Image: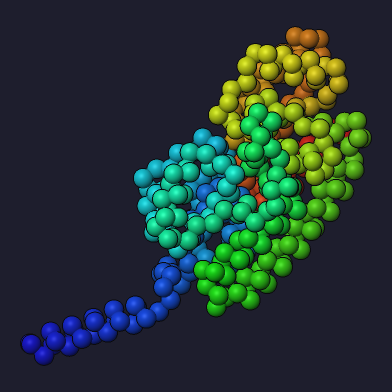
Length: 309
């Protein structure tokens, strides 16, 4: 009996030694690295570059507003147990800053996809110069930069698969080139005078800069700010004066503010349509065709063009 117990102990100790001599990063039971991403857009980016080598867990689902999101105890545990945590940065996940600092101080790998983009490409807050608009994904060129950052982060996680991550990056950059061609082709259908985009909050300024739209948001860049009566009245007046055909609700923002704007326009003797719902801070639900970054952008551009052309 003693011999059997000793043999079991030796086998167990050997298993511990073998495990300890492997890669210092942990992997899931399916052999993939555990990566936690904050938003659906960031999660999709990591999946696109990481491919078969990562198991990506997103904290926020479709339609969730990252500006207001508060991490649960379960979220914190997920991040603590992950090999890598990836987030947008630029204070998009405004209520999670302390959590990110704690994770970073524990020497766990944490990556902001916006970190390598030159600041000259960022849009300043009008009311708070030096703080930047976080909605960088609405300029495809900036999202290409984010993709390169993710690839470098994954190579740091495991350099053994560097060539695979680089190959995935090149493929994805090609898909983003095709997306840009589609965007520009569809926008050409809208007369230049009609290229005015009015939404629930200021999420589309990068889009406006990149693709030649004048953009107006009823709320500020963060949905934590509320639109006042004067904001609604001034924007309604603008719509009437410019004879804007359509305004848009957003998937991550309650539609009541845009409906109030529509009523304010009507009170001034003009009729503006709600042109549809845009995805602003997240992708669409599974099965909608908008569950990826590319699908989301295509769905948005189709909705915008069809309402304004």
